[in-house]
Amino acid sequence: MPEPYDPELGGPAEPKPYASELGGSSEPKPYAPDELRALDRAHVWHPYGPMPGRQEPLIVESASGVRLRLAEPVEGQRELVDGMSSWWSAVHGYNHPVLNEAARGQLDRMSHVMFGGLTHEPAVRLATRLVEITPEPLQHVFLADSGSVSVEVAVKMCLQYWRSAGRPEKRRLLTWRGGYHGDTWQPMSVCDPDGGMHELWSGALPRQVFADAPPDGFDAEPDPAYVARLRELIAAHADEVAAVIVEPVVQGAGGMRFHSPAYLRVLREACDELDVLLVFDEIATGFGRTGKLFAAGHAGVSPDVMCVGKALTGGYLTMAATLCTSRVAEGISRGEVPVLAHGPTFMGNPLAASIASASVDLLLGQDWEGEVARIGTGLRSGLAAASDLPGVVDVRVLGAIGVVQLDHEVDMAAATRAAVREGVWLRPFRDLVYTMPPYVTGDDDVQRICRAVCAAAREG
Ligand SMILES: *Cc1c(COP(=O)(O)O)cnc(C)c1O
Image 1: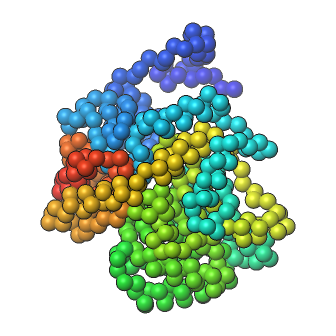
Image 2: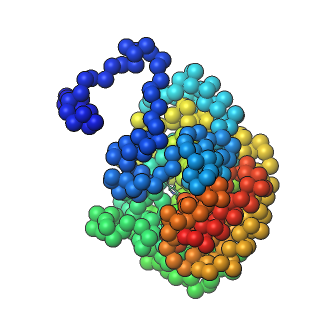
Image 3: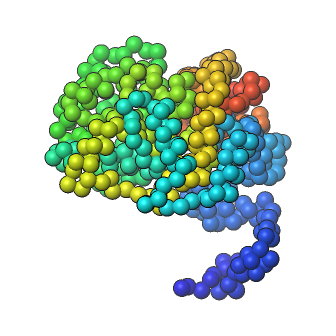
């Protein structure tokens, strides 16, 4: 074992005493904000960040309801209304008494036990609940530890299904451009090849089949020429394609674009006809965000495999799930390797599963459709002003998602500062300033978020 090394001292340091030797319950001495920032910059990776980091992150001390409390005032603000729901996940806001109670209750029983050879009520309850609330043919649930892993599992299911069916050559994926499915290897291979990291990884990533991005507009009439091209592409590759994978209705991190649900019906029909499985990645769209409980509901179609994540635990802990039909599960089980060879260490984590069940019950126990529609109405009226701003090319709202698209790359620092000055947390990307507020955001706070989006669009 290497010597413990203390970078502050620049040489081997005294081994750190155990907490028990310090008297057990003693809390570590809090860092001053400057100290925290320096250590963060020196040691801690942030999403899509360089190392050492840029000095940009704000320090959050706590969060409650729809507000993040900062460790120190920034642009005169100590509290920010969260317009991001922590990347689509915190739909009930922070520090929610019901979710806190679910966490505490489970914590006192057990936070985790392995899932191989053992099972427990939190996982069984959650899986059963997910089967109940997702489209009818989805019957079986694999509890994964993040969205990206749930997509890996979905891909493994599809490839293994065809392998078991004696068609191992069906191992490519087909998707449309503009998508985002996560940052691990298989998900990355079906992300938008232009916006994603494809060039960096060309040669290393599995090569998938790409259709053009679906034409814009949730309400737009489906384009017959696009439909024909999509069908042709699937037909041309049906012998080598295991599955079509798409985000239904809303392409999220790939560009916040909305498309007609009619294209999902086209995919369902083509996949049925041509012996290709259909995967819906509902990690971003699930649990009401687009106005239906799942975006598949806009089209009235059901996939063979479906991923959920993000809002699954109400933003409390990392957990995702891959659901599949009995046809897929039975197909896999008939193969030479009759098992799904996947089993994360923290599979089925009881703490996350308990909170997830509580979050789903909390959602379904209220008029979530009304709340999402209310926020959508607020976003529509509050963001209308953005249309007149110079450099704005589009303003769009669907469910509780509001997007302002610019004709240039957003200046992140300037846009963030402008939003913070309005007392709001936003995280724009590429040419987009957008918001997905928690469903509990009050009307005044929705308008405050809209003012911040406009300010960020103006100054970014
Ligand atoms: C966020 C996201 C993922 C990846 O989930 P992680 O939990 O970040 O791994 C996959 N697909 C979609 C549609 C997402 O929005």
